[in-house]
Image 1 (cartoon, helix red, strand yellow):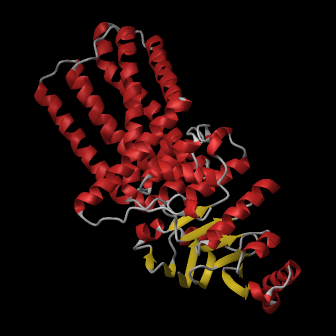
Image 2 (cartoon, rainbow over the protein chains, first blue to last red):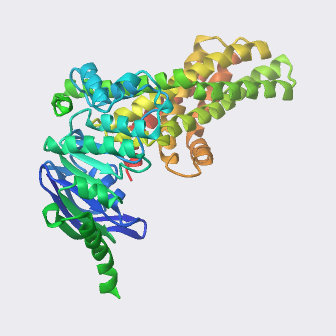
Image 3 (cartoon, chains in turn blue, brown):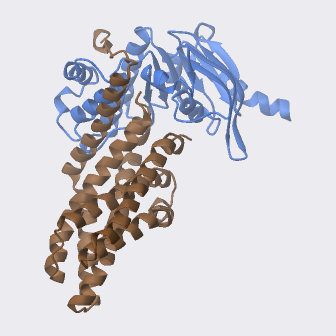
Length: 239
Length: 243
């Protein structure tokens, strides 16, 4: 579903992604782990067609970026740590706006279904700026799944959420995965990643330095040990 | 929950008519969103209006002019007011997109990105025209000058289109920078100078009742600048918004 080959991204003289390869099969849930500054957000922004790679090939659902970006965007849902919602519009109006942008059929019914799903149906006429951080993130997920995308990208979606909101988010993530959607999620929270993902990739210094299937990880402690080893290896080899 | 996640999305049609319909739908969605948000907050229009009215008040007290001198400075005062108030509006309009990452939300939509540009530009134009419609009668009273002539209204419309066309593109660039508030006027005013000069000359000619042939030259220039600026913005918006 996602195929990345020899991806390079530079910001001026700084190279953020170094000839990176990455593959995700349809229906896989990949947790992309890595230290701060490893390039996780930059990588997701490239997949989301918000950032243009310097070199390399990116294909999503068979469509190539950046040439077929509109076709890719139609199949993508993105949740980041920012809600991408308008504070001066109500929850309903926000979803109606995005529904128009995605040309969704039977939009009003779909919006009500999504609001029901994220538990905000009774607040649908309230302005988003009156929502708590957790409610905004739930609505952000509603916005991202509104057009039922094949691929979901989550960039540290648990950031700033309380325990209840995290649990709610996890339920939505599981529901998305259960429907066979392909998911790539960056996270610093290894326990949550271990609970949700079917594969764990570690991105460090602009490359995937390690990858392991969930079946090979018995406990969260194993994942932590795997992660630490993966992150420290390049430094050790350089030293 | 599984059923709730199911939805049918219109399969994109490839015909020119369908593409145009998709383009217009997205463009009007952006315009509607900007108008609805402004109707709630009234932040942008209030700021622009208060600023514009203060500028013409200050000019009124600073320049104690006789009737003849007043006619010659009116076009300059008007366009300085519109330009400065317009910069405030452009900055605020794009800042609202940046605040909660909404610009990314717009760019993630599977639409031609120039539809987003035109939606934002039309929204900005509506805000600027509203401010101009309030400023004109106030100016007419303060300076004892009748500004409601069809020719002058046409020049104001054409000048505003050119100003907003280039302003919307540059505000999209400037909003990415930390110094966006000072960056926009620094980038905008040199580029928009041809529009402002043509608009001031055309407005001045109409207010001083010079022969129509002399005014028409400046109006033609305004039309040409509008077409050029809109075309440039249409071509480059996609590159400006992508990292």
